[in-house]
Image 1 (spheres, rainbow, N blue to C red):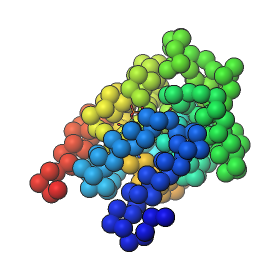
Image 2: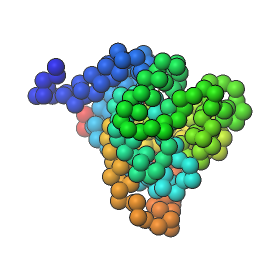
Image 3: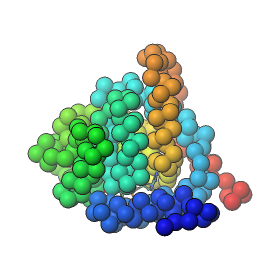
Length: 246
Ligand code: PTJ
């Protein structure tokens, strides 16, 4: 039981969710390490959504509405921390949800599928190996994707993705949007758009933004996207790490 008056209460609650997900068998061992790395960067950003991230979120939501077949990719960490919000966002856009695991095992896929099913979302993709095709014809588990989901998508939202897979997806001509607290990661640099923020804040803000943008015309959405540069946005994100304020 975490005492509510603990100064790091929110952070401890997240750790608890990560630990429980590991014990339930759907979060990978390295998912715990990844969470720790995320925590470090979150500290450096003052545990708040920065101005560059707010811009990246607006551009992302506009792109999600403009995409023909947008897919949100989920893994162990995403399921443990924000599965309700992911389902809400997917329904709002609408976008598909695909289970896409770096350390893929049938057991982990089945547990995540049953969690998503129990939430009332019935069409989660990426659960059936036979339905998988290889992006760009690269016969590696890194390139496996479901036929009606990531394989045929024009836009993939990847909260917490590995660099190799991001590269494969970008090289196949898909628009790749990452959420990654590390602005220096290969994923952050390779993605077309990177939201440098904690998924626990980024996804709820995306939902709010989607509610605001849902009646916008295509022209209005295109205006929001104009002039965005991921390279510049990452540089601006790095400037938000102000060591003098720590
Ligand atoms: O469930 P699986 O098998 O797909 O595995 C998932 C992990 C995350 C273990 C796998 O994709 C992996 O190894 O990822 P990396 O290469 O460690 O990258 C994870 C990135 O996510 C790191 O740059 C972290 O800083 C960042 N990160 C961690 N927690 C969060 C985060 N970014 C946003 N929000 C977080 N809560």
